[in-house]
Image (cartoon, rainbow, N blue to C red; front, side):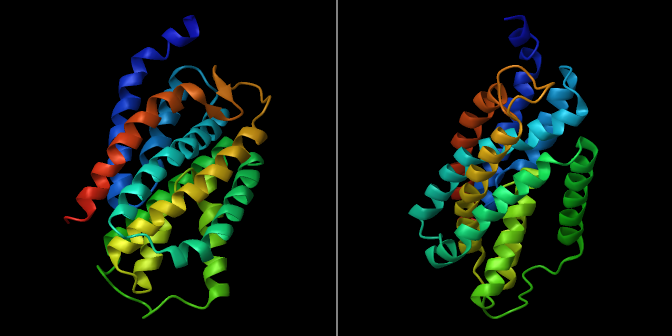
Length: 247
């Protein structure tokens, strides 16, 4: 019980992160990990979890949260006809395989390496948003199937390592290949489920019995963080998806 009490002052922060993460997940077709990973990391380090372990737990818990977020978001987009099932069938197995690979790689990485990886990822996305040309199409259609499979594997691997749903990579990739933006967002939200499930399972297995984990953990996945983030992200994702079709 004492262990639970020390979590309470930070629960409001997690609830707020879940609200924001859920809304942007539906709006942009992402998993929300760009919001939840830093907040979870702050939370865990402030309750005494080692920074080296805290990053792994933050990424793993974010991926577990993204399962519900992406399911909720993709369902909302599916009702509006914006999920491309042909892309989903082609990309899905390779996104999932890449996610498992990413979780295995992350298990061998130090906390410092994962923080560097995550920070570099955010800076790269920020630079792309800052200097990229709005609506620029690089191709009139998606490349051949084998190239798409390679792209999907990379997105799955990278997304699992940094604890995101992959939308920050898959949405601009699809849009650059002339996929309409609403369809790119909807399809990416569905792909987020395929990133999150094997990635979360991989982190549970790789963290099983690891020393220094926070209380109430399943491998690297924090059940306490999950219980707070799941309902808020899942409830707000359809709101973001609805907003995406009005913007």
